[in-house]
Each structure stands twice: as structure tokens, then as C-alpha cells.
Image (cartoon, rainbow, N blue to C red; front, side, top):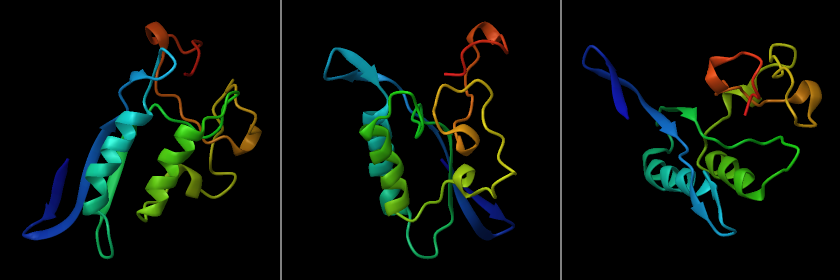
Amino acid sequence: MADVYQGEAYVLTVASVYGMFQPVPGNREDSYPTMHGVLDRLTPMVGPGSHVVVGGDFNSWRHSSTPSVHYEAVFDRFASIGMSDCIEANVRGVRNPMPNCSCSAGDRCTNVQTYRHQRRPDSNPW
């Protein structure tokens, strides 16, 4: 996390986030506990007049062949503190749906490929 200044004037705060997988009930791993921890730390920083940009790999998605209420809760928390999803906010037609995405959203897909297995462009995008 860093504050950005232009000369002496504060401009905004930027945060790079990684939704690390960790053990969750059901003998599996998931990123939502990490993302809720991130949101716990971000929430006091965001309010009227604040300028905060958060980016990174959340390892969380809205559209999937197996939707998750846990991921929806993460995105709902971002919205509840006044943050906007810049991908969702794009004007229809400007967004480029992820090729070969397994979600059922079609041209409304907002998933973004963040991983390439062995750097192969034809690998699964998740």
C-alpha cells in the first residue's frame, strides 16, 4: 500500500492485493478469508473524500460454473464501503469477455485471466 503525491499534494492511495488461498472448512482451500482480512484493513481507509485504488489477483470471481456465496460476499463488501468494480463499470461493448471462460455469463463475463499454467496461452484461464 502506498500514498501517491503530486508535489506536496496527496492524490490517492493504492493497494496491491493478493487473495492467498488458505484452509477453509470442508478440507479445501479458498481465498475468501484472506480477502475479508484485506477488507477489514481497507474499510477504515475508505470514506467520503477518500481516493483509494485496489488492484491485484483476488482469486475471487462472480461468474462461474460453480457460483460461490463467499465470493459474492467479498464483492458486496467492496461495494458496501463505496468501492466500484472498474471491470463491471465498463460500458457494454468495451469489455472483452474472457475467451473460453467456463462461466455462463457469455458476453456479460467479467472474469479476467490472471494465470497461465506453464505460461501457455491455451491453458485453463483459472
